[in-house]
Length: 122
Image (cartoon, rainbow, N blue to C red; front, side):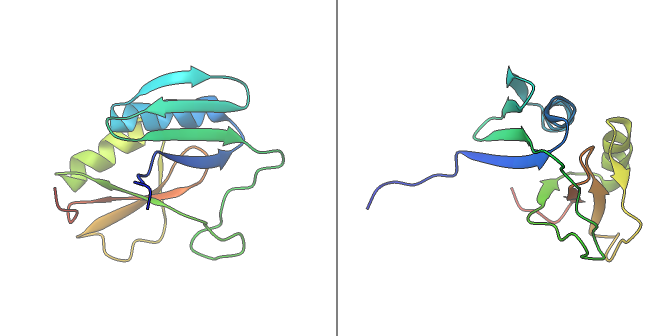
């Protein structure tokens, strides 16, 4: 069998530049490629890309009317400082928080839910 490894995670959005800039700043990556329709962010062991989709509509989490198709969990050492940092970068704190002592849910600039958690092992 071939050797497989996860090489990239791609996220649909309306504005690839804004989404790429957000995730590069949050995860300490570099925006390596930019066009009107695609942005590639180089991380240490993974590429994260933002892809323009015509008529993109963000998920309506947690209602499920427009379900989320995936979300990212981001490890952080301090939830309070992490919250301040992601809000300063343009994230929005989700109104529903099911376990705020262990993880916090936010929406990125394209409306994708993501979590900050202190519970993710090294």
